[in-house]
Image (tube, rainbow, N blue to C red; front, side, top):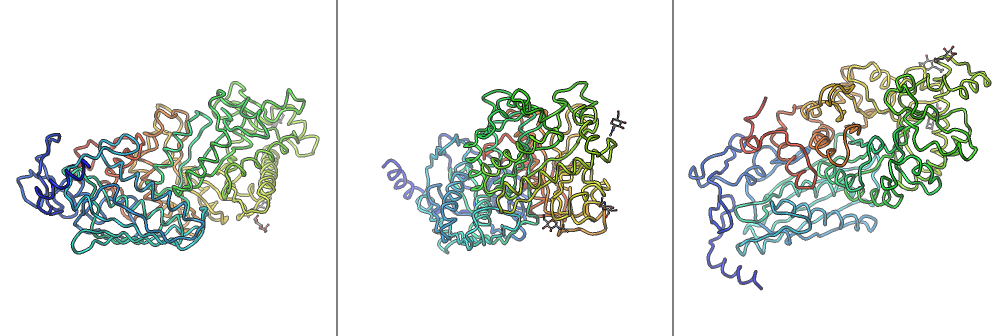
Length: 615
Ligand SMILES: *[C@@H]1O[C@H](CO)[C@@H](O)[C@H](O)[C@H]1NC(C)=O
Ligand SMILES: *[C@@H]1O[C@H](CO)[C@@H](O)[C@H](O)[C@H]1NC(C)=O
Ligand SMILES: *[C@@H]1O[C@H](CO)[C@@H](O)[C@H](O)[C@H]1NC(C)=O
C-alpha cells in the first residue's frame, strides 16, 4: 500500500531514467557523491561529476567496462553490453526446463542466485536487504526472466562432468523486460551460469536498485576438471558454519572440490557410528566433533553449490590421537609413537603417531572406517588416502614392529620398510574398493617416498592412483609422476600453500595472490618434461593447513587467494595477474558480500582508480 502510493508519486515526478547516465536525484537520507566514472580504454576512470553527462556510478562502470566487466573467473568467451536496466530483487523469475532428477537442485540454485542479489545491498544483514527506494515505475515493474535449460540428469559431480554453459542476456527494445537464457548439459553448468549472471548484476547506490546489463553473451567451460581447496580440521577444529561459508565462497568462484583433511595425528574429530571411540579419544573436546548427520548435510549443501567433497583419512603416518582405544580392549595398539617425544626422532611435527602395520586389527578397523566414510559422504567419487611422511625410525624403534618385520623375513632396512608401506597402501586400496561395493572410487595419494620411482610400482600401476604433487615446481618428482603416466593434481607448495608466511614456519614466505594466480600447471609440466600433459593434469588445489588458523582467521587466509587459483584453473589464462587485478579487487568485495571475511589486497582507492596501483 505504502509502496503503491510512493510509486504513483514517482511516476509523476520522474522522467524516464536514461539508464546509462548518472542520476543525481537526491534523497534526504543519502549523501551523494561528487564523483562519476567513465569507461576509457577498457578501464573505469574517475572524474568530477560536473565532468559530463555520460559519467556513471562506479559499480555501473565496473559492470560494463573492459573485456568482460567484473566477471570472475573470466569466461572462455564473453561480450558484455554497455547499458544497464534497473530492477528490484523480487523481479527475477525462473523459467526452468530440466530433467526431474535435477529440477529441485535448480530451484535451490535459483534461490541462492536471488540471495546473492540481495547481498549486493550495502545494508544487507542476512535474509533480506532493507530496500528503501523511491523507485520509478519502470524499475519496479522491470521483468527479469531467467530461462534455464538443463539437458542432462546428472546430479553428482564427477571428473567427467560437463560443467560448460552458455548464457545470453537480451533486453526488449522498450527496456521493460530482460531475459537471461541459460543452456547447459548438466545442472552443474547451469549453476555456474547463474553465478555468472549474478556477476552481471550489481547495486546502484544512486537509485537504491539493482542493475543488470542489458545484453551479454557468454560461452564458457572450465580448463580443468578438478579445482580444489584443502581444509585441515585436525590441527585445529573449525565449525560446520565455517565450512559452509567456505563452500559459499568456492561457489562464487566456481571452485568445485573441497578436499577435507579430516584427521591427523593431532585429533580425530569425526564421529563414527561403528567406532565411537575414535572421536571419543581423538576429538579436542566433545563439542569439537562432526556428527554424521552434519557431514551428510554439508555434502548436500556443497552439491547445490557445485562443489564435491573429497574426504581424506591420512594414513599410515599422520595418525595418532583417536587410535589409542584398542589397547584397553585387549586388541593391541593401532598406532605407535603417539605423542612421543622428542618429536624430531619420530615425525616431522608434533604430535607424532603412525599406524601399527604389525597389528591385523588395524585392517579390520580401517575397513570399518572406510565403509562409514563412503556412506556419510555418498556418493564418493574421489577419496584421499593421504600417504605422506612416514617416519621409518618410528616403526623401526617400535619393538613390536621390528620383531614382526624380522619374524616375517621382511628385513629391517629402509627398502624393507618402504615395501611394507606399499603393502599397507595396497591393503588400504583393497579395503576402500570393498567398501565401495562395486562403485568406482578414485584414490589419491600425496607425493612421498612411496611415490618415488621403483616404490609405488611395487604393488601399483599408474591408473590406480591420482597423485597430488605438493613439492616445489622444480622437483624431479613432477617429471617422474608424469613419465609414469599418473594423473596428477598440482598443489606445489611454493605457490599454492596458503599456510606459509608465518614467522619461521618451514615453508617460508606468504604466497601472495599474484603468485597463486600465475602458477600454471601446464607451464610447470612443460618446463619439467617438454610437454603440457593436459591429459594427465586433472587440475590443482590450494592447501590451507591449519596450524595457525581456525574459524577466527581462516577466511582471511583462504580468501581471496583461493579465488586467484579459481581463475587459473577455470580460465587457464595466458596473461598474468596484471590483466586480472581490476576484476580480482572487485571479486574480493563480492566474496565479502557473500559472507566471508576476505582479506583486503589493496586500499579502496585502487578499486576506484583502476590500474593505478601496480607495484
Ligand atoms: C632399524 O634398526 C636396526 C637395528 O637397530 C638397524 O640396523 C636398521 O638400520 C634400522 N633400520 C632403519 C630403516 O633405520
Ligand atoms: C619399478 O619400475 C621401475 C621403472 O619402470 C623399474 O626399474 C623397477 O624395476 C620396478 N620395480 C619393481 C619392484 O617392479
Ligand atoms: C591397473 O589398475 C587398474 C585399476 O585398478 C586395473 O583395472 C588394471 O587391471 C591394472 N593394470 C595392471 C597392468 O595391473
